[in-house]
Length: 124
Length: 249
Image (tube, rainbow over all chains, first blue to last red; front, side, top):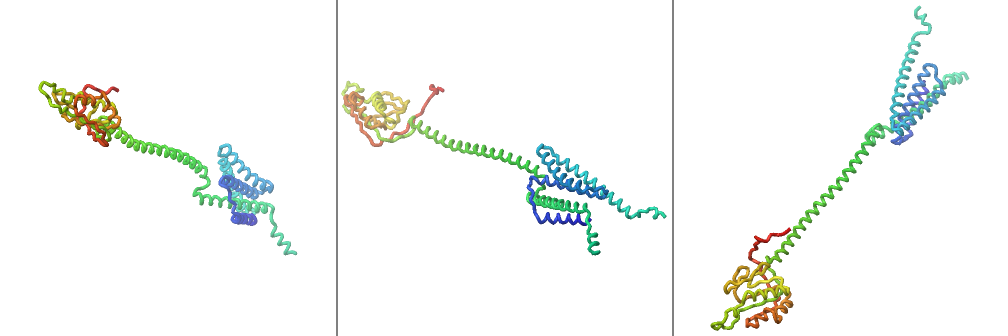
């Protein structure tokens, strides 16, 4: 698990190194894109913990969700409808759900690792 | 070699870890950039980015209101200027009215005037009265005064006084016994008529053959008509009475 965290650190350091100034008008879009990115990442972590991680789905989902969220917000601004609110709620629900599943998976793994595989032995 | 192999084994990286790492790099970069921008906005504008739309709306509203107020200022300044002008004009109007009043007073004879004109003196005839003579032949009558006054006015006199009595529009000369009343005041010979006006014209007209002075001279009355550089005609000191005459609108 150390490489992803290293990657995260690298990303953070890069963010501090390169100060990219996002124009005021686009700040909203980048915010929603980050929310989509967080959702995708957590979904990927959950998929991995549940053993059904698919790299192509994960990577494609990451970029697709991020871009699509920003696009949806832009369309909403054009239409005059705050679609980004819906995106925020949707992604937040998914994030919370994924966090819950991750927590459950981690706990299951923990309890399973605590309990030996041959539980009968313990009973014995 | 074993060490190398075991090293490679320990450094075995799962594909998913690599993918996740790359994704985390991008995500970390994005998050940090976003947070930095947000903090910058908050620092510069003292307002979080979520409120930017609201603030833009408020700004437009305030700008519109300021435009309205500016127009109000222009209108109020115009009003002030109008009032100022009104005051100035008021003063001007007052001055104009005052000047008009002075003019009217002048025309009514309520103001003493001075200027070049003609001085005419009429005296009673020095011829001694013989018993049986009509005394009318040796005294100056009001008609004579009236004639001379009339001639002077006719030839351009602007202001006229007889023995210090200003002759105005309602001045009547009449005879009471042997005295002449002018402005209801008794005047006695010698009659000094001071007329302010064009001296040459008045003199020419008054001295013309067939005029009043000529007639008086013919009857032996000492008559003098002299041009003057500066004559002072006093103001009318009498009263005006308009019990019958009312102004018509």
